[in-house]
Image (cartoon, rainbow, N blue to C red; front, side, top):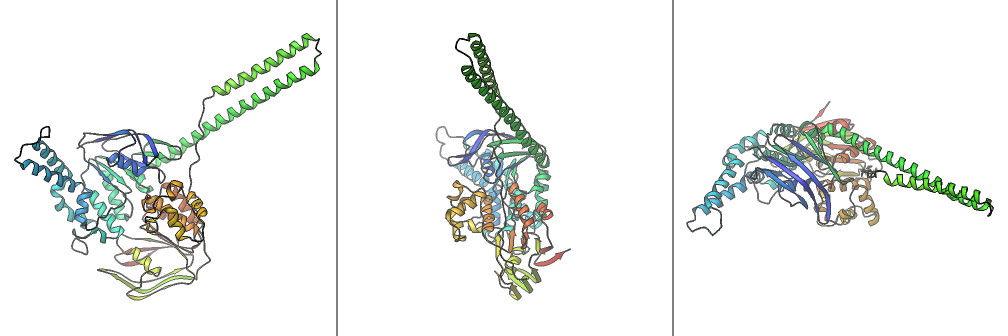
Length: 556
């Protein structure tokens, strides 16, 4: 089914705060709209409004046809206790809901009791539910599921099956299951929130091919610059600093160029206005001084009986006053140009600790077993000051390797040793440091007790986490906001071994660029786990380790 989504004058936010308003967007078949903006600008909120999950503060969202099948896939995999992979995919694809609605309609249709006055005809309800069920792909979902899972490396004859619990999966495996749900879906319009998070390079290729091959409209939020450049046809920017939004035609690279040109034009227009106004104000001030000085001189120098000179001086002063009034009138007639607000920028530096020992960590024939998965044997040496990039498919053992290197998991065979004076700073994949019920400020203070409450709030404000953030429960913040809190912690603590596990997940584009700049000046040891293709090319690395099927190889 071809479907079109239209948003008119949409406003949204949370509590009393409005994040955006006046959003106008039309998503037609074949459109791929990239939604960009800083963390906290309301991108996820707008997606939920488009999906019908949230009501807008103002404006409307309409579908043509009205029964179009809209799929919304949030950025965090909401794993329900006791939910299997098959049940999760059925829920994410909308098949479970369509099945429940059809079953309820079938029961109502078989009810021999007469329908209540004004109630819809059970036959019509069942027909609509059946159409919805067929459109969702529920009829053959069980048949299609095994092949897709196997193709994604989640073989049903291995350690995983359709009945495996979602809560037992790693972050990478959960990301693969989420991708499977997307590939198995049959939505008319797809709304994707950070679909690239935790996906390996193969998963990213599959996702790109899927998005590029869709005939329906797509609205997506992503901070993967390469993914945006390859997929989107238009960009909707939510500009929190300016309190505005704008749709840019063309792809992502075109958006970057056009945005920079637009910002420069705004700055030039304001500078021109400010210079013209300052010039007129200065000239008016001079004219006013001349007028006042002329009157005073006339009163001092002209004798009382010299009527002609007094009259001439008076006329001259009036002429000066008239010029002042004309100048003030010109100032009032100037078209006001609002000064562009200064954009928030992450000013990020990584706190440094005294150097560690020359050898940071070693693994000697280390073997780690987790169920049916085995990592190793691995023999590696990480030296002080080395910058190592770690890549590999989901579930290959990258996180296990990190735990072994950092002394957090003892090998079942072989040995592992951590060097002396090692001060580890980490941004973990799950962003687990800030996930509790305590307010953000309190959670942060507990991790850096040497800092006062005022110092903590000042530091968090530098990372865009201000008064309305620090008092909220840390677990209620967006993943991007929790990531920025983790970066603030790195700045507060001195580290000589920096571990970044998928650091670009949830971070906005500006913050990613700031992180890359901070890594340029960082002189300690770096372990970088990422699938961000542009970051791998941008950050200077001394070594590359590739992890696959429990085996670690060094790439040349």
